[in-house]
Amino acid sequence: MVSPLELLREANREYPATRIVWPAIAIVAVLAIIESFRISWSVAALGAIVILILLILFLIVSAIAGILGRDRQGFAILRLPVFVIVWAYTLSICVVLGLCISCFFFRWPGSFAELVTFGQSVAVAKSEKPTQTPPVVQPVPRSDTPSASPVGQGPQVDVARVNACLNAIDKEKLSVAEVTVQSRQCLQAGK
Image (cartoon, rainbow, N blue to C red; front, side, top):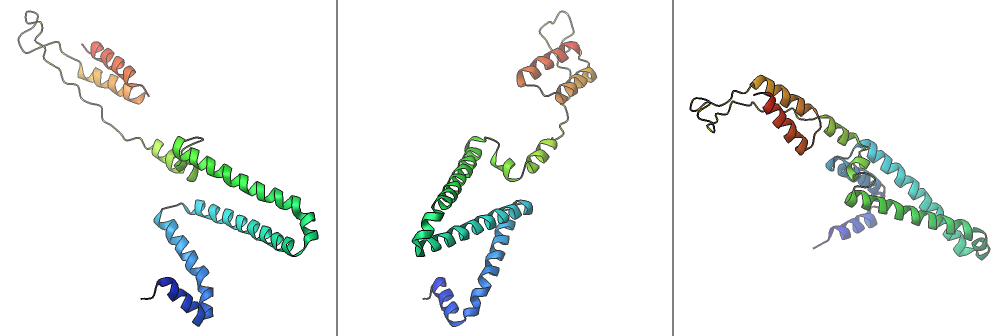
């Protein structure tokens, strides 16, 4: 049985023009990956520009290495620039990798999703707060003081006033403890 890799090698040997098709296949594959992961096209374009810049840098460094391999005098002249370029590239990769790891695991300087989408999806998610209807408070019969009121009836609660208090609480950004205190005050005010 023929493996796909052997089939491709045989096609390149028999028909050398198929080598021209590989860049187009690579572009279509990249577009399919971008679409399947639902990556924004602006982020993909930025990534493509960064990759092209890095490829040009790689070609320059490999050309310099080729020159240096043939000419020993060129090695002495270009040693410092090559040294600086190689170390700058290495350090930049290390910094980017470190920031990606810290974003992904520790959410510093922000979550990875915020940085990749430039904060667009997070801002939309924060602005779309689901609307909640406040709970309706019904009068609760209390029988702890049977002599003060008839059986089955307790103090009456002003439902409209309690609902207004709960709506006011819902609009504020309060902690659970503050909501509890505010709710108690609303219930006491509604008596």
